[in-house]
Image (tube, rainbow over all chains, first blue to last red; front, side, top):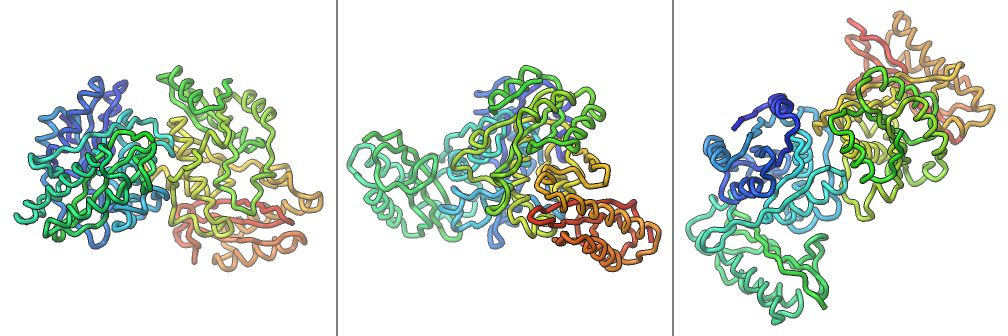
Length: 286
Length: 286
């Protein structure tokens, strides 16, 4: 496995392997089974391709009061995991390598980004779009994998690919969970013991409410969100940021379930730590 | 020469010519010698490459009161010129082919775009960046040519390539002029006979003032802009939009000439028609 720290090293490596296609797995490091499952999925879905993982904690997608400085960094462990799971190369640039001091180009998404996580993280998805576009252009992949846990991010990045005509197929990776259902996240490390004990309520509530919708017991999004709210508020340290049931593609809040493919989205604070999770439902017909 | 109207046709054509590199010459059609000189330059500088010209009048770079509807369209003549000058293919999509109805991704440039032409055309350069990024991603060129006549556009697009890491070399094409010095432009067709007779004053004044700077007669940008203003205002139908002497890279207005590479930029209305032109100076040392 090659470890590439500069854009030029990456370009040289790609040139030396001319004729091979690549699958990209972008990460911010602090790798857990959620990330390594994406590398595994890359091997399964594109076995002919080189797999390029990237490790870059992107400053432009963090707000001024967010956790950029304290975001966990563990490069040696991360590289070992990438190698074990079969990455061909890891691109791990310094921030000064990625952005010129007077950089003035950014990418803006205007339809899917302002609500949900975007409401409490202004500029976040523009920062994500800009860095992912750069990683796409640097690594020139034919396929890129993103986890479904960041469901809004996945929808925004599909839009990025569609609207700028990137010749890249996006493959979503299913959310990986701890045994008690909590979605894997690098930010789980911030949780106190008590918060960690209550955090599985998010997935438990999402799953129960999804089942209630599928079985017809919960007949409207309003009813379903009310039940979700009650369930999650039953965990003492939980403070709801948002709970929404949206269309899987447009991310618009559903007003009924007829002919929809609903996605249940949750963002919940446990102390200072904001956790997100989501579950899908099969298409519902009238 | 292939004429390609859909993205899929373009992708198929590229796939069929796998292994060949491409040089891109993007245009809005209404081709004149300025455009064909870029195709000629593409043949000279990248003789091994396929040359892909694009003809697309991009709605998103026109303001609501601008000339999108009346912009000259003459596809048959344009295709004949592309063929004569040796283009390998022309990509000429309909607007509905280029943009999805609910497109929500755009590219924003924040340092070079707001002044000069950007001041009277808000959103123009974001529209240019977005469509050029799409054309880059659709045609996948190793080289792209843009005319120096649109000098601010050239600077903005160099920034686009640098900041998003497009693996593309930009080559500027020298401005092509009529015998009397007027820079070729599709918009020259809008000029009345009287306006056309006076329009060469722009290049004449730029040239004389550039000579005055190079010879040391004009010692400051202030002095030089004053002379430029006097000269251009001597033509009765001319109404100045801006006259500026800027740094060639940052486009910031110069306050003195020491250790600079100045560019003299002019935008002048003749009636309703806004003409732009510019001339460069070699680097000046203290």
